[in-house]
Length: 298
Length: 298
Image (cartoon, rainbow over all chains, first blue to last red; front, side):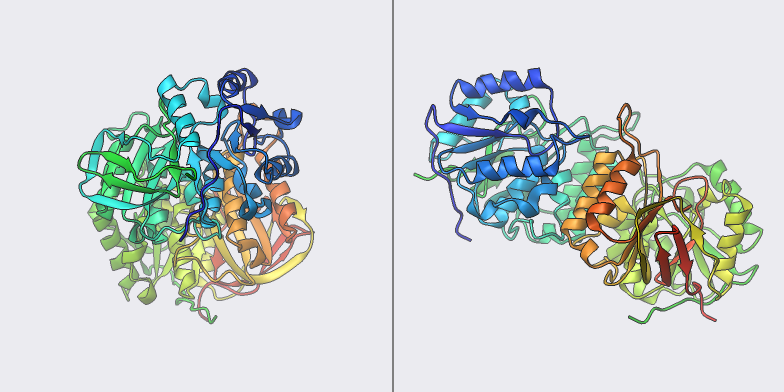
């Protein structure tokens, strides 16, 4: 597959801020928006703040907002207010094949990433706006650098080797809950030879097992070459004598694929941005993820 | 597809009791076991009470236990101690194509049902042993009748029409969480023209939406003819101004398939047994599910 990269951003470029998933806390959002506005020129619709149950407004509103952003030739990137839930509902009506700006986000936005990668498009798994204000300067700098420079970013380091070995391939995946909800749909990215990134939040260990087992039964682990585990935030079972890490380690060992864990990616204190649809090398023994290219065109 | 029905049970027949999913409370189990033992002759292994994290023992133990029961030509049925989680882990190693006795259970056992139906086999969605003692006599009688008589059982009635209309087809499905975790795997039953049964427990409304949306994106609702909703027990969002029923009603209306809700099937006070892989007629206007045949051979 030939991967399509968007154009690099430059400071003060127009960028869209959209809310395709859940409603959000406005003050927290505004802190992150201020960080974004220091670097780029954010465009937002006033109905961004809509709320309908667990969604940031009805499907029609969210789909229109994101579709408009995807088709805007003058904007260079799209940032998402928050994850939560709701992007997958929009997939059949998004003009993803004609997307111009670089899409960014994580968590629930994993479904948009996957659908873009199913079309051979690079996107950035990185902070949403409600998270951006809480991220340290190092993460913000890495985010802006990844958006602006065609160079490969510096490697990331995890904290544990679950299965030793090395693997090279295209980085795909994101949130385990959201990614596994695309199995059996047309929105699953091309997994053959890929390095699979997984992270999650507030999922009990048996649920992590259930989702991982779903990936296994669907043949995902016979297609990918390696597994990169980010943060599994607040995934512990109260009163249990085992941790979510114990469960993940055992699951990874059952696959026998190179796997390292504890990468600063996901819902924790650090959510370093990574480019999905770009080539990486996982050295599981050293718990190191090396990036072989950048996210944007030279 | 030609559906294969097992032989009918007779009182005092040998039956297996297995624990392919989660560990369970022994006193609760023993109450249900006593109910079963009044009618049949249960066979259990002493290691049935094993526990490993959230599983009733390691995969090897659970797979051996269930495989032995499936291949026992002298036993007439298989009952499960409890659901929870764990059956899906065993699917690739179960001798389902050679299964002799009638398999029963619900909730996590939905994965075994689906895999059996993928092979054209009828099984009974009904109480697990830890639930059996809490079910009223009417449910117990209906269970024994369904196991023993080749006649179609009396209809079941729901409480609400979500989408009017009628649908006739083979009944498939079970627990929404577990069933949707088979999308994209070889264990999904033949859904074309089916009537889909769904129930769940302790799933927040946005999660119900996420699972339902997964079914939609995987094309399930363009294959089935109607939807039967059982109990959605303890599925309310604390403090929300909408109910799980509101969410389910809206989801059903988006599909436009005949759909009735509130059938006494699932994790609630009543879990009436129904035969998966048999022909039914859903009259959504009357919220009535009519059974056109029994679960066992004449």
